[in-house]
Image 1: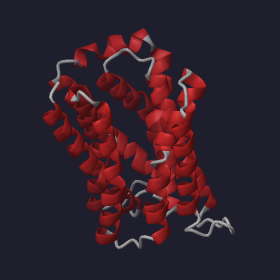
Image 2: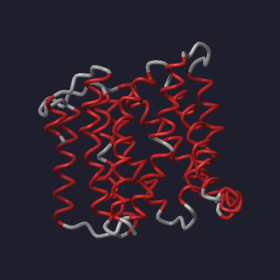
Image 3: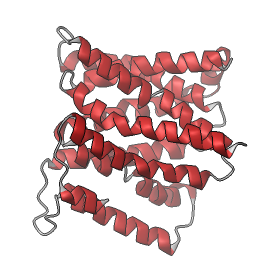
Length: 276
C-alpha cells in the first residue's frame, strides 16, 4: 500500500477522464457513434493487450475465457458494446456539458442497484443523496425549466440516463468476477469487436475520414476505454483508504466543463453548474 502512489495514479486517471467529453464531441464531427465505438474498441483492445503482456498475464487470457465463456460474452455485450453505443449516441444528440453530468449520475444508480441485486443496505443519507442527485439531473436536463420539463433532446437525455444503468449493471456483474480485471476488460473488448465492427459498416461509409478523426478516436480508445482504467485500478490497489481516491472522480466534471468551453467553444448553461 502506498497512498502517495495511489493519489498519483488516481489524479492521472481523473485528469485524463476530464478530457474525454471534449474528445467525444471532436470525434463525432468525423464519425458516427457506431464507427466511433468500433474504432475506439480496436485501439482499446490493442492497448489492454499491451498492458497484459507487460504484466506477464497475456498467456492466461484463453484459460480465463474458457473458464466462463458465457459470462465474459455477457460482460462484453454490456461494456463496451451497448454501453458505449448508447453513451456516444447521447453525446451525439446532446451538448457534452449536459451528457456528461447526466452520465456521471451512474454513482447514484449503482447505489440503488446494489441494494436491489446485492442486498446492500441503503442508509437514510444515501436516499437523501439519491433524491438530491436526481433532482440535479432534472435541473441539468431541463436547463432549469423544471415546470415545463422541456428537454433539448428527450432521446438524448433518455440514452444518457440509460447509460448509467448499463454501467452500474456492468460493475455489479463484475463483483462476481474473481479473474484478473485487466484480462476481464480485454476479453470484453475482444468479444464485442465482431459486433461493433459489423454494426459500424451499416451506419456509414468509412471512406474519407480525415486524420483528425482517427487521432481523436485513438485518444478516446486509449484514455476513456483503455489505459485510464488500468491507472484507476492501480490507484484502488495502492490506496489504504479507497474513499479518498474515489472522491477524486468528482473533480473530473468541472475540469471537463472548462475544457469544453475553451477548446470547442461549447456554452455552459448556468443550470449545468447549479445542477451539479
